[in-house]
Image 1 (cartoon, rainbow, N blue to C red):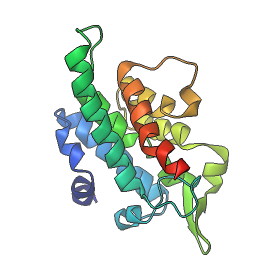
Image 2 (image 1 turned 60 degrees about the vertical axis):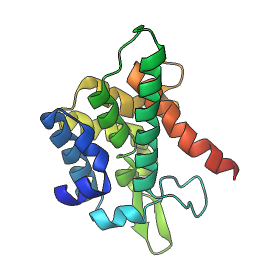
Image 3 (image 1 turned 30 degrees about the vertical axis):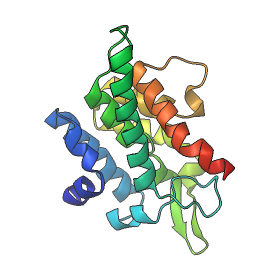
Length: 178
């Protein structure tokens, strides 16, 4: 499973810290197993159930978010005059895991992919943050997952979380309109 995840999420290899990379992979592995999925299923899991017949799967959405976040971080670093720091490893791990909880939030049914019983009780920022904590990811990565969606509105977001939050909504909002 690990090798397949490295193929579908090549950005994992951009995490320089080996321990962080392995923990990030471990979270995906556990989510897939606990959700009753296979890695190949990720290709057909929509990144959202809020858009009927969503044309973008969880893989492409996750990769889109992390690629936008990486590029944004480059530009912000160029123009922020060192007012704040951005940790690329934290940013990439958090971006790759921001929606991992959706693997538990969704289930496969005869009518297609729907909310799971877990998903009816816990939105993906909660279940994803829980998985990340279980695997001892740094608090900042857990923070990114926990606050990337509306649950984080009105509260503190570290710079990496701000970037992932906006990258996520840049990939989501225009799709809702089209």
